[in-house]
Length: 130
Image (cartoon, rainbow, N blue to C red; front, side, top):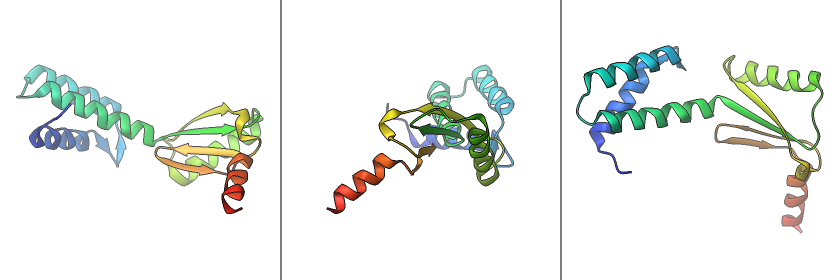
């Protein structure tokens, strides 16, 4: 879907209005969306779609997926979650997954950043060097 500069600019401005202390406020997003729907400015559907995309990207940026070869015990999971919240803010949400392909270690994905400390990635790096 191709959108105009005006729509993209309006959606970015609207998105900025929904931030409080550089954090997304879901109440403001709802209020802004309802106001756009009520007022129906030119291209409001495209603005809403672009706003939804920006909100989805922000939510993904604040969601951590932690993968391990075997399920983590509660204390390890809590320590990892606390460390992420301490480093990146209290609004980080965490999701723990099990992936036997890792063989051991952890892979943490937070938005577009990935920290891969798995045995599988180390073996792949070693095979690339040889």
